Image 1 (cartoon, rainbow, N blue to C red):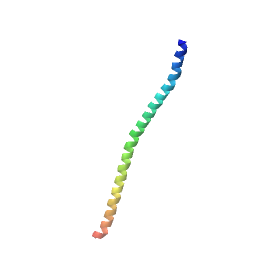
Image 2: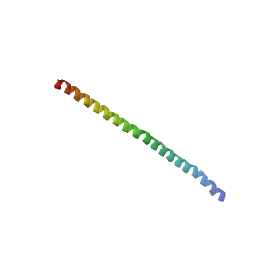
Image 3: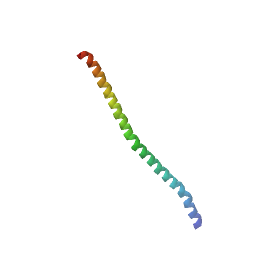
Image 4: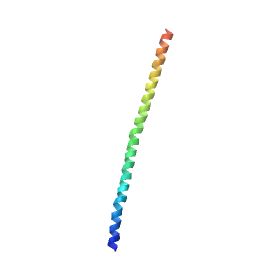
Length: 69
């Protein structure tokens, strides 16, 4: 009887262990994605902002040019 109950525990353990490993791996993947994508997203936003500012400045300069001369 003792051996039977002992055999049952390891049979259930691998599934639990597998779930823990899966959750651990998913957590790592999410953290890595966040660490990589957040600076990338910030960089893209800054780039977009710079491009918009450049476009606005160029528009203002081109509009101001003929009017001032």
